[in-house]
Image (cartoon, rainbow, N blue to C red; front, side):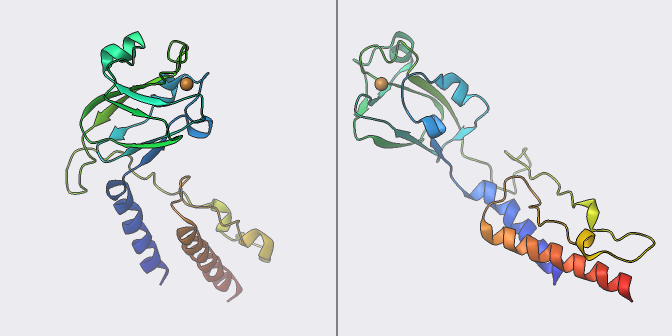
Length: 194
Ligand SMILES: [Cu+2]
């Protein structure tokens, strides 16, 4: 049973990265506001066609979609779209760099602008090119092995149910992994006691 669960979990983990589009909350918990360096926020992230940007902002801000010249010069006069609703979701539909700025006076000049490089949609699993984020191989805690000599101590035999990967997708798979670890522990205890 344990191997079946593990196999199902592996299939699940392998299928997720290619299947899910990502919604990026611009600025993360800070949102779309003054005083944030959005070039830093963009660094290290991969944006793809099919993903979504979500701008969350207060009344003093808005979002203008501009071209590179508008971005460089903080000029929103040529904006193709403007949003004021405080929670703006923009779908990334084409490959290339999208440019945004806040047209409130002075905000763009103080850094409230965003350039997002958009790549092609994520490759399908059958494509031989490198996947965006291969799951790191899990490392089981070594404390599950019983002592070679002496009586087994039940406390040392039950490690905490740590998730196998740092980014566990949901609580359900955590529960499955917990059952797997408990099952392995029980098998080890049974082997020691017989
Ligand atoms: Cu602003």
